[in-house]
Length: 334
Ligand code: TTP
Ligand code: MG
Image (tube, rainbow, N blue to C red; front, side, top):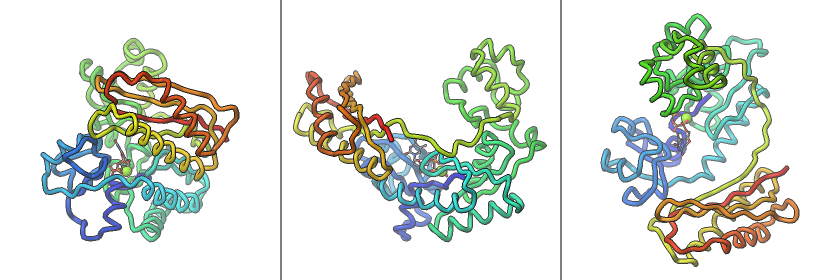
C-alpha cells in the first residue's frame, strides 16, 4: 500500500479549495527561496514537477501552482492513523515509510481483491485519502504493482503476469535500481526488466559483483524471498536545515541547532526512545561537510542534556567559512 501524492493529499484535505489545482509541497513553501519539492499533486505533475526538483525550477514550470510548506508533524500524525488501520486488517505489517507499508494477507480467508477494497475503503473513511495497492506473491512484485495504476490504483499480479506486465517496464522500476545502475545497464543496452532477465547471470555478476549481480538476476525474474519485517528499531533520529543564505552568524547557527535538537527530542519522546551519541553536521558554502560527535554518560531523552551535548559538538568546529547547512543526529537505544 502506498498513499497517493501523500503530503499534497493531506494539504488538500485541510483546504478543499485546492482540489484540482496544481499543488507543490516543499521547504518553507516559498518557491523563490532555496529548497526542493517534497511532492506534487497529480495536477502539478502534468507540468513536469516531481519530488527532489528545486522549488525555483518548479515555479518556472508552473508559476500558478499553489506552493505550500512542509508540515511534517501533520503528515506523521496521518501516517500513524493509516498504519493503525492497516494493522487492524492484518497485524503482519511492515512499515516501510511515511506513506507505505507491506501487509501479509495470506492467512485472511477472503479474496485478495476483497481485502484490498476493504483497505481502500477503511483508509478513505478514516482519513479521506486515497491509496494505491499492489497484490503479488512477494514484496518485490507487490511494490512494483502498487505503482502500476496510480492514483487510487488496485493491481493484482500473479506469477503468470511477469512476462506481460513486468518485463516491459524500465529497469528503474525494480527496487534497488537507482540512476547509477540504470546508466550502467543502458551502456549494456539493457533498458527493460525483460532485457535484464534475458542477460546471463555470469555477465551481471561480472559487472555488478556477486551479491548485487545475483540480486538483479533474481529480481528481474520476480524472485524475492525477503520476509516481512514487522518490527525494527530505529538506529537514529536526525534533522537538518539548509539556510536561506549561507551564514557566518554564530547566533543564527546556534538558534537553528537548538530548534533542530528540540524537534529530534520531540520525535524520540513520541516514539519512546533514548539516545546516547550526539552528532552535529555542518556543511560549508563550498559543500565541505564535517561532523563532530560526543557521547553522553548514559542514554537520555532529556532536552537540556542533549542540547548541551549538541552545543559542545558545535564548539568543536572552526567556523572559518560561511555555513550552508546544519544538522543533528541522535543515536538511539530503546
Ligand atoms: P512517495 O510515495 O514516493 O510519493 P507520493 O506519495 O507523494 O506520490 P505517489 O502517488 O507517486 O506515491 O513519497 C511519499 C511522501 O514522501 C511524499 O508525499 C513526500 C515525501 N517525499 C519527500 O519528501 N522527498 C522525496 O524525494 C520523495 C520521493 C518523497
Ligand atoms: Mg506515495
